[in-house]
Length: 170
Image (cartoon, rainbow, N blue to C red; front, top):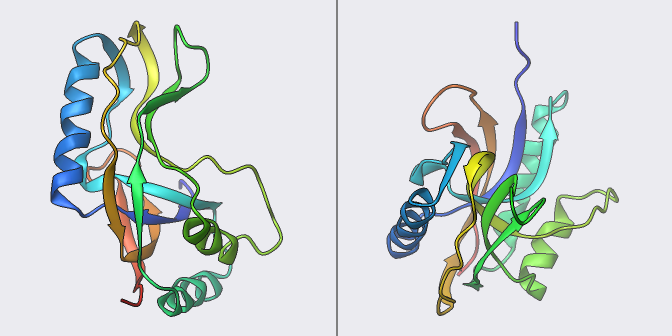
């Protein structure tokens, strides 16, 4: 039996932003082939990958505690990538690390600080093609008003299921 993995993230539920991300994916698909093109329902910013979870109650409580944080606006930046520029393993929409995002990120780290490059994945697992030069996009402000604990469901769509969530204060 396969183990179940979890992560904590910021779900993207802004309809206009989702539309812009899907348009960006479609533009990339004209030039590149990737194994994984995340479904719009799966767009998110990962705050912490947990892997297998032994103490589910602890992480659920950490998510619930996030309701004490205020909602905040994040600008969505341009397209960037992880890996080699000719064959990038992940193409993503960049998100600047604002003080508010950093504060929420730190809440979930429990001293396990790692480098953090906030982003929304557009494609992963390169197969073929070359990353096109894309016109710089104007920054789109996104209201972050919730965070969630997600279960990863390989082979399903949507791939990520929210199992706990918190609404951030207004």
